[in-house]
Image 1: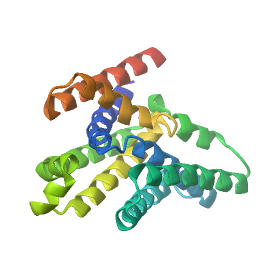
Image 2: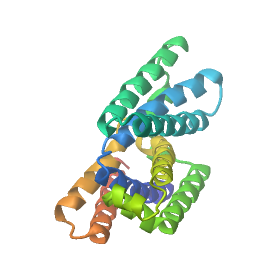
Image 3: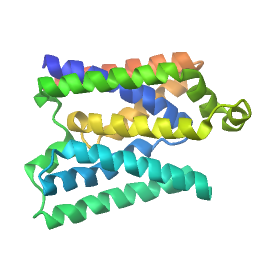
Length: 229
């Protein structure tokens, strides 16, 4: 249970921070779309006999970067690009599962998560990736925040907005796949969206909103673990 609490709190903080930037950019369902694309990566890994999270990382990050590139190049709305990723990701996953002989217990563990069964190695990986992503956000905090609220003005100010956008979706991809083993493909978007929407309703200013979001997310995870234990 201690490992579950440590991993859960780390994931709660990470999802609320990364998710806040996505929600403010009107990419609320981007986490859900990445999770669906990672489902295809997980199925591919199980079919190929490779550790499924590694293939999920590759597929999710590639999908996020490609969709972002297409959106920027062809001026497609964020909602439309997310819809493409949502539908195609789950479709590819189902096709691969069909080819591999149907659903298995491994697939279901990734769909719904298994936070109480998290290992020491998984906990270390979660803490390491959480720390790394939060450090990156702190290093590029001004650029990320500026481009989130006023992209055009950020470009005029010399901020490499396109690179910042790629950085955000890259971190979102890492965050989603890292969280999947604990929370599951079907529930990961809840940690990205619900705490942040709640925080935006009651927060005054970005920092207060972020603090409320993290507190709400951590509280929800702790209560959920205690109830399920």
